[in-house]
Length: 633
Image (cartoon, rainbow, N blue to C red; front, side, top):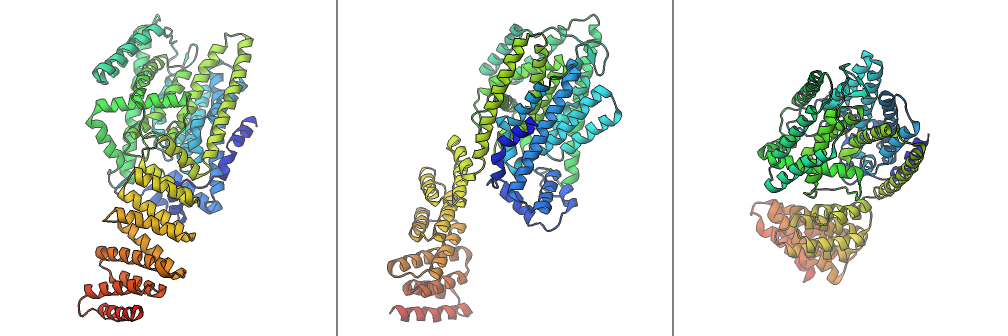
């Protein structure tokens, strides 16, 4: 009850958020316009270009439409409930892991593990973003699979193993990252679940304690090699040597058996990885008519320069591990990270070697967290998703890392005095309160697109795309003064023809609708004068706005001439692009109604001169031209 109350209290602001301007509006709009549920099209789309394959997400959107007509607040409520369910599953899984690994379970430590995951700042993106339900729903199924696996380790019932496999593969229909968990399932079969207990082999397996000095020697060699040669394959070779050194150090009378056990474990993991990858490819072959996608393009990039790929992946791993322990600053858009994260990534890689050899339950949980992160590493190329790095990519990994680290800490606490337990409880309460505070204020930031994008632009000020999205969010929020300031700033500091045209269209139309006609005209004229070849959407927007002004307002004098001249200029340019005389005729009619007879005459005259003698519209243009000439004369 404390867990439920705490998570709901922190995520309460999420319930009042709207649709995120990124992805949410498009996804909800597409479902809103669909009249029937096409199950075949959902599970077997058969399209030529296959991007994401997540049919369970499409089903969830359809349920939202039928249940509460895609109500935003209720969809956010769903996200919070699903996330809370994940936190409860972490509580259950960690409680069972303690009983299996330590023989007893400390309830307060299970609560702490669930709170750390439930309130961790890096999970706020997946919970607040409606489109982020892919992470949350995948985690529901994966964590359920983990709980069933822990029951299977304890009770050894076949139906539990079947449930583990079915839940794991169902998670793959929510998000592709579940492939990492499927690849790592053999680790749960091979792990040492107690001091002298192994699931596969009854032979005890003990290894020499981790030697810090030896670790730093290997790390220094790998680090210097990467820095001075830039050849990251040497880092992989050092990683393999380090693993072999750890295997050689195993102290046991029957060391041959233990080495066979390690080789068997490696074989099972390799087989699981190969079979899972083949199954993933076969599924995509089955549901899509071809393999043309951004995923295929990224694989080509990965293979083109494998050394750079290794460097990029190591940096990404280092970045995400840092994000788990030090999540600030939180950022919705991360396109690149500091190359120094490669150094942390090398250290993490060597630590993984130690965990692979150790192969106890805490180590396996941490390794599974890394395996869940692995499918997101190719995103670092920036060719698949709109952002190369994202906090949501470690949503589920953070649950496994939390359980693994705390399970290891629980083992260390068995030899400590009571005062240490009290100090740890006090520290845990402080850590939970700190995480709750950071997450609460981050949830408030996610309530508004304008606030969220302002924060994103502040952290990534050099990306014009983000400024354009921020401008759009300001217009949608009705903050036209701020939108006008932002538009003028980015159009002067980051000039871009298409970007300026989109911005002028958004701001100009919003200003005109609120009666700020002069400012709307200034906005259009500025961008039109700056670019001789204006984009067609901008011209259409300007024509639409000027004609609306001429039709809905009574203008006189210079203002009427100004509006009519601008309309004539844009209509003429559109005519040159589309060769549609009706555009000019409609513009001339608007000018006549507004009293701008000279502008109307020029428009009708242009139509008259451009058409052939036998064209019916030529006679219409001639008649209207004469009428306009008589009026202004």
